[in-house]
Length: 433
Image 1 (tube, one colour):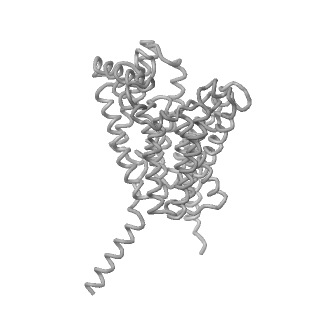
Image 2 (tube, helix red, strand yellow; image 1 turned 60 degrees about the horizontal axis):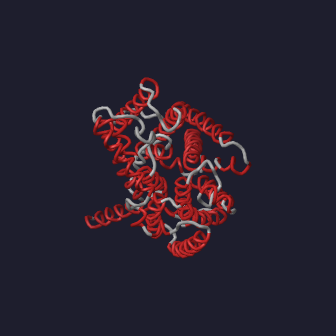
Image 3 (cartoon, one colour; image 1 turned 45 degrees about the vertical axis):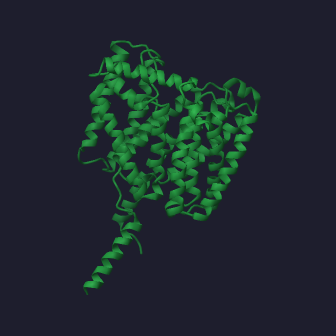
């Protein structure tokens, strides 16, 4: 049966917008990780790849916003969530301008670098992700992001094959653009996306080639998590991978789930043994009590950052203290603490409310649309990272995933639940008849 011209145009418009939305999400989830290996592979300056990439992303996001306007896909009404978002971004932008222009507050990085992140990357990405209301439009981003992260994790393994890399960077990686925290979360994302492709979660069937790639993404992602030594990434994996496996058992391939669990255990065991011989402090991850104790240098530093940030908020509770923690001149490694420190009680509370709304909607989306549950799981991963080691600026992944959670329209109840209600209704009709 052929489609009418009106339905055909609607389908083409939906498909074109879906491609654009998927490319935005792919660039945000995996694009920078993949492009950051170019400087280390070819021995060129890091800015030769990363700066043009950010410029291309900015231009592409502006083009997507233009297409949203042209296709009449903008929201027709202003919601309370929109007002909360606008008020927080207004307060945060004013705080940055005061610190960088009027007060000239010392910062960890030059003000123009922070301005490029905030106004050139984060706010445009947040805007376009917030305006796209249909979560199904991001469907193509799953295989694209997984393949890019598979390349990135594989490149990380190849670059970490020499002793000089370990001696220079303290890790089994040689990429000087990313840090161990970035490596760890890169591996977590690779595992989550690989599981969704491989285990057919939500009933989505993939080609056998893509599923083979998914299995590689899972195994290499596990190695990357362990090799990074990042505790935040380890916690994210411990929380989100079991959720992915549960979705696979209930809404995917049970037999393949058992197989991938066995492969993951073998990969993890091999990785622990291999990394121990390479001088990695694997016990730091295994002994969680030591890893998060105040005696650990990294944890002690974060505790000092958070304590100082809270003290500065207490000294200036109305409008906040500064956009950075004044003693270390950097972010306090906890997004909520940073929001209160930078913008004060009222706007810090608004940011907290936005986080809680995002968490609530992410939980609902996971249950209502299991096939797209990888999107809220990636949001949870970015949120966990922001609570352990991340912040508000230079964190486009958090803001992009948070914008999707805040802006996406809630789908109807899952098909299984709908079918159950239809069955119950049919039985009642038959009983009355």
